[in-house]
Length: 406
Ligand SMILES: *Cc1c(COP(=O)(O)O)cnc(C)c1O
Image 1 (cartoon, rainbow, N blue to C red):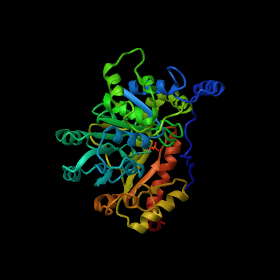
Image 2: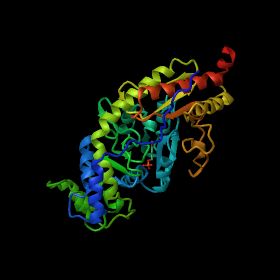
Image 3: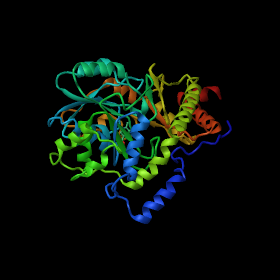
Image 4: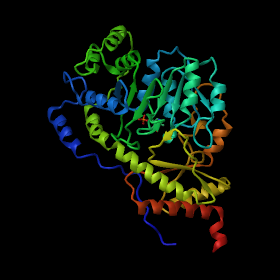
């Protein structure tokens, strides 16, 4: 076999050149704090633009998606030790946000299609659950129709962890706008890259007022969160209600981050289109391998992937390890969520969760066979072909098929 070029998948796309002029302006004036200017600070403009892009009433930009999740839970005003149901397949930062908010994470099973197992979700959504975080892990959307029906029937608020779902839709509606609050990330491995950063969106005036104040809008800085030229009595009343009543956690975003993010928003649609095209091209090719399956999306979902997840079938643990090594030898790094030591996406490593370690046999079985490879939107077809050849070749090698064929 000829050795094909495999691309570097960790390099991000360059930041659009328009960001430079704005960053220069901010560096010359030293105006980096969102509350220095009387109005229209870059962070405030980002909030308006992001809310409009997603179709939400309010947005609050903060230091990370984890901060957004934490503030969302705090905004709900839950009692201490409130139990928050969330999927057992997510990033460690998600249960961490609940622990940080003095809540107790309760994990439910996830199927081999990376989505919440609705039977287990329904069984665990009992009267002890005060809130739900739906983490759309790697942008895989769970059955939001069933989840919202169950939660609405019991008046349980839903927070969407849409960190990796910017551009994903469900029945044509943006992910992050279905639950009460949606949280997104601008960390470098997400669709919009500011190194670090996060944002929450909601239509709920009371929730956003609480989150704004706790994010660090001390004194009357909340005035700089009022919609431009609009008197919004509902929002103003909510700010007045919570004035001086809430602790400040200071999780604000800097103007520099907003300057890096804003010019990328007009690239989201293209990145989504290219990412989906790349994903579906690779998925179709991998499906040809007898050792690989790529689970299908749910019907109402339109995806916005920048990575691919697939399951190895018919291989034992040793062969799965051989697969990962063989793929790396071919220049493609694959993470098998459950096999790498101390993986932050394996629930048994979340030992900071109080109480007995949960047992989630179905999620565990999935994590032992589920593979993760980055697939940035900027990749070209020859680069994708290189990745396909590396992955299918590695699967053949791991299965022993290659040895037999030689
Ligand atoms: C990246 C990610 C997070 C954390 O985002 P940060 O901005 O790094 O805090 C949370 N959940 C999911 C699903 C993610 O992909």
